[in-house]
Length: 177
Image 1: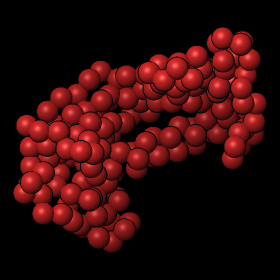
Image 2: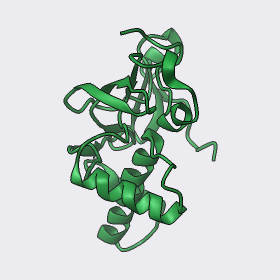
Image 3: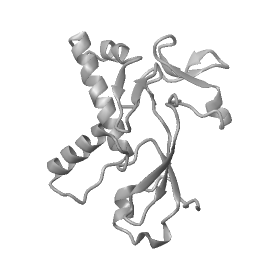
């Protein structure tokens, strides 16, 4: 097995390529279309029916949006409004089935806990899942960069997505969006 220069190559990109030189390379992602679960089979069938193209593939960002949108819809139903602060608070700790057979959990940092999958590229551009972790809590900031290592995201207790632990201040009070 070898590692490709870009470990998150999508199956869609691979399906359009001559994969001869990619077979056996590894990729790490939270979702691959080749995940074997009833929920994933249903999702793929619905996607292909909607798009009207059996050759189109699903990918990790699509699964993340599917989970996130369903969590948002459940939170709106639970609080009976689309008011941002009420919905945001209803999101914390919410669980929703992911498409790989497990359950995604929304953290107070607005990131999901999901398993990490290692996939080996096949000749057809899809992936054989050769390893899957237990769900890993999503982290808004990396500890591997000095300027980021001091940041914490906690909307529940700190009311802040960019809290500087050295200065004890919320760096960003308003969204860029």
